[in-house]
Length: 116
Image 1 (cartoon, rainbow, N blue to C red):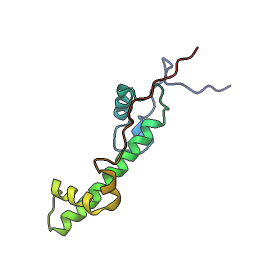
Image 2 (cartoon, rainbow, N blue to C red; image 1 turned 180 degrees about the vertical axis):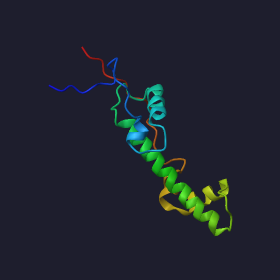
Image 3 (tube, rainbow, N blue to C red; image 1 turned 120 degrees about the vertical axis):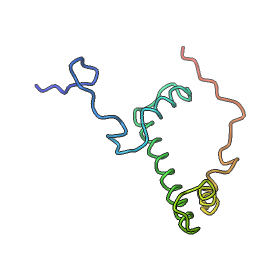
């Protein structure tokens, strides 16, 4: 019977990092650490930081792409903060996403139920 080596085995070498496996540029381990430090949830799936990292990378790539087009339209070679701001204002979806009241805050945090 063949056994696969596990990362927690003493003789096993660790596999590739989460960002490498998911083909991402942003660090999955940092997002995982920040999620766990915030303690928003007591338990996290192993896919949660990978998915959140992919979403952050996707949004960043889209914003930089639009800002690059704004910089090109104003005959500049470098993206400035003004180009990013104009890109966010001119895109309806991104403008809505970054409004001050885009996400509602609960009146009070829910209290966790205690198990008997």
